[in-house]
Every structure is written in C-alpha cells, then in structure tokens.
Image 1: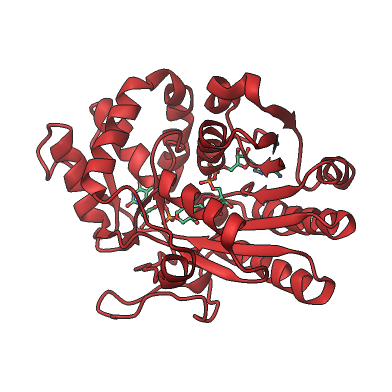
Image 2: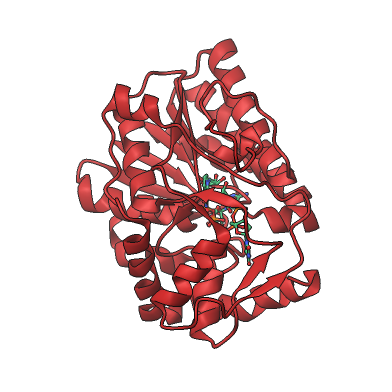
Length: 331
Ligand code: NAD
Ligand code: TDX
C-alpha cells in the first residue's frame, strides 16, 4: 500500500511514520511536509532510507495532485497546531488548516483515493470542571480559538466532500498527545526542558485546566485501526481516559525529575483558555476493538522525560527561540 503522510516531520506524523515502518512492512510511505518552524527532518533520520521525503506545501495544488495520484491512502496530519501561535497570528492557520485541507480533498476527489483526516477534540469547545459529560461524535462543534476553529472548518470540509462527492473518508478527533519528538513550545516538553535548564515551569492561570492525555503511540494505533476497520464517512473520537489538571502534570514532572513539586511559577493566562477536554472513545473501543497500550500516564511521562534527557541535540536548537516568543507574551 502506498501511503502519503502529510506533516510527517511533525510530532504525531513522525511517530506515525516510525510506527508504520516498524510494524507494517507492506506500507510504502511518502511524507509531504513544508518543514515549517514545527517540522524537523531529523525526526525522520532513523527511517530516512525507508521512506520518500518531499518538502512542499499542502496548499500547492499541482504538487499535491501529483503525489495523491500516486497514493492508495492519504493520512493528513499537517497543520498549524499551536493555540498560542494562533492567537498571535491566525493567518497561517487559515491557510494551512483550511486551504491546505481543501487542496488535499480536491486531489483525493479527482483520483478516488482513500483519505483519513487527523483532527482534535478542541473542535467541541470545552467542558466545565464539574460536568460529568465527555465529548462524543454527536457533541456540537463549538471551537474557541483560531486554531480550533480552523481545525473545525477542515473537519466540516471533509464531511461535505464525503456527502456531496462521495470521497472515501474517515475523521478522528484525538485528545492531547504526549511523547517523543513533540516541539518544545507544547506544555509537557516545555516544562521538561525548562527543568533540565534549571528554569521554573510556567503554569497558565491557576493550573486548574484539565487535558485528557494520550500517548502518541496509542493515538497512532487508533489511526491504523480506523484506516483498516473503520466505517467510511464515520467520525471516531480517540482518547485513553487520561484526564489530569495542568497543576498535577507540572507537579508530577517536577517530582519525577527530582525537584520540589512546588518549584513552578503561575503566569498570565491564555486568552479564551479552554477549561477541560474529555473524550468518550466508546465507538473506537466497542466497534473497532482498539485498546491503549500506555495504561499509566505517570509511566508514560517518566519515559518521555527520559527521551528529552537523552535527545537534547534534537530539541536544543529550538529552545531559545521558543522561550523568546513566550517572553513577548509574558508567559
Ligand atoms: P506539529 O506542529 O508538531 O506538526 C505539524 C507538521 O505539519 C510539521 O511538520 C509542519 O512542518 C507541517 N506543516 C505545517 N504546515 C504545512 C503545510 N502548509 N504544508 C505541509 N506541511 C505543513 O503538529 P502535531 O502536534 O504533530 O499535530 C499533527 C496533527 O494532529 C494536526 O492536524 C493536529 O491538529 C492534530 N492533533 C494534535 C494533537 C496534539 O496533542 N498535538 C491532538 C489532537 C490532534
Ligand atoms: O507553558 C505552558 N503552560 C501551560 O499551563 C503551556 C505551553 C501550556 N499550558 C497549558 C495550556 C493548556 O491548558 O497546558 C495545557 C496544554 O497546552 P498545549 O500544550 O499548548 O496544548 P493545548 O492548547 O491543550 O492543545 C493541544 O492539544 C490539542 C495541541 O497543541 C493541539 O494541537 C491539539 O489539537
């Protein structure tokens, strides 16, 4: 099977490529990635001789048309992915997440290629802390940020292309991922690398916000379950019952790294900051028989900390510029 992976030099896409090369000898992978500030070819160094890498933009219709024509499956990870950036400069989010997805959908429609769309639970907005509810595929869309609204827009394009043009598509909306190769702008890698550098972690607001953490390997096994056994036209929510508030995450990182658990700073809150995300993954578990392999968030976090300790050469080049950007926001 020939698979076109967009965004394969980013965090989740690179882990998807590694997992696929490791576990699926029948798959031939081409990565299409623009190598924005978030992409890093070094994340694919270990599999470079087993894949084809194309540097390019998903909004480049001619390039995309040619690559999709040569694929049996498109798995679309490429996106502008960071909420804080979307508040500072929304345009790249509209361009990549909306126009880029449109460009892929048009190529998929023309060439009749199977398409899997990677999205986020943030399209559903947020939940109150004391609400027993979780997101399901029936929860109304209610995105809060430029990032999540452009992801919601892209999901709606996929649904329309499936209904009106009959493209063979599935969608997955996953909760917060953690694991190797995640950019140091994101919450967990930022705090882990801060502690390595002797800098106190930075918690937005009061740290009560809850995220539903899933290990990136579990996200990607779920994506393969949907590709192989999912119903065309269906949306699947991916989550591993990993709700933890941000304060507890920071305290656990500090404890696992041998620091005092209160050695962090509260900083100004993110505007429009979603309070809580929580996923009901019943459809994925019941219909597709998927189960997460990373049962303990604490153990997964400890392994992730070890990875950042062992791979400083990978993250170090991006650390200073990332912190300089945060400094301008007072965060
Ligand atoms: P990331 O920012 O680490 O990687 C994004 C990749 O896309 C980068 O390699 C970048 O170079 C590439 N890219 C950006 N614009 C491009 C363009 N115009 N053309 C081609 N390539 C381009 O993101 P991530 O965290 O790996 O997220 C991957 C996908 O998963 C996104 O669609 C995101 O919305 C979704 N998602 C992420 C999470 C999470 O917790 N990180 C959770 C749920 C869903
Ligand atoms: O320094 C920080 N301090 C802090 O308290 C940072 C960077 C974040 N936070 C908080 C904000 C969030 O409540 O931690 C939580 C997680 O923040 P991010 O890593 O920025 O993730 P989030 O905004 O929840 O979005 C992530 O999950 C859904 C991904 O970035 C998205 O791509 C995905 O769709």
